[in-house]
Length: 153
Image (cartoon, rainbow, N blue to C red; front, side):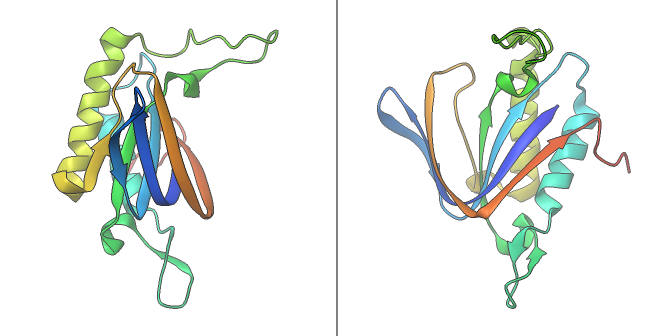
């Protein structure tokens, strides 16, 4: 499982020209899945993301987490996080989970976030939809997490 996380002042998802979901201060999380991902990966990655100390404290230092700041999260599925660009010019997505596997993982990831920070704090895109994502990256702060590289504590 891979996540590209951006600290944002605001972010939104448009589908068919209309705003589907939007958040103010918080995190935009692009999430991709591979066939070996399991619930333990979801739990570990969710915990890691919500506890990352990437928000400013009263001294302007990155010492506060999403939980501590009461920030929001916008979660968007993105199978292209598992692109393989080593050969040629056309990316291969063979490492990404097919939708039959990825949809339940995406839904479980969203549920884990809602349980961790509150349902009202979590917005989402639509799995498989053609989405236009708008954001104001605050910092900028952009992080890449992969469950193969996240502590297994």
